[in-house]
Image (cartoon, rainbow, N blue to C red; front, side, top):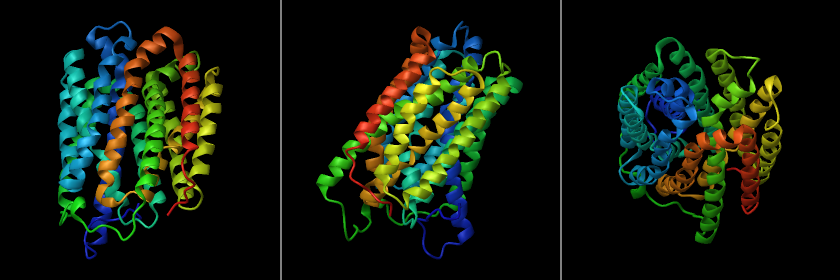
Length: 400
């Protein structure tokens, strides 16, 4: 991960630069890990809270994802105007405290409130942490790819660590462990990350900038594609634990074994981000994105009718296509948007895309309960078609 760029002075020790850059990648893993703890442990939490079906408890998690989307706007603005280092400190310490509140929840509404607060702090990372990493990067695609891999390994951790903790220590431990990790990372980040001399918005403007008409067109397209992509991301990552349980019934039934299988899906699929990050720096972004979106349509449709080990194989390919589409939005923002306003632009599109896609979390339980996972997977194939059509309006873009 030594390729991660720096925001510090040129004389900053390389080991220190590597340290806080590594912590930013760890933060991405934590961010995705904590957002999926509830969905992974929902069966155990529902039983503890007196619910007969896990689907009936899922809507209580929707506040976390609405907050994750809406909170991105003020987080992005503060990242540019106040500074990215202090915002990342708020991320680490606020996330840790809210996870402790989740672990202490005694019923569905206290849990819903704690999850919503957690979502607000989790919202800080994407509009703040990623621009902090990619500033001055000579190979932004590679940097984004490594960062994306870290985020997806967090998703794998949500499946593996949560499954193990729920089985051996109870669902409360599944929130407690990442809470302590986040607090520890915050202490390290405070010691290693250099203080910014001035916030991004007060830096000198670049010599060249993209025309406003191009910026408006690109922002409109990436908002649409990011929204539909986030819908798919939330439907899959929040539903995969129960989906795998249903489709592997009769083959694998142990909760920990299912957690290991789901973690394996995420770990293998995460490699797609490294490959895509490498390709983004070298070939046309639009053509690459369209090919990945087309594969999503085919894979979702095929997975809708699969069971057993054939479903497991398709699920791995399906998630590789989902993860492989993630780096493009950040790469396009790096290509077109001045660093002084990147956090605000990223925050604005995240507010729209994740705010709308939070509906996926709210609707997941009721949809599966009424129509089943087959209808959900076919619906995601349709959403992927919409994403493909929106992406065709992008200009041809070659990585920097």
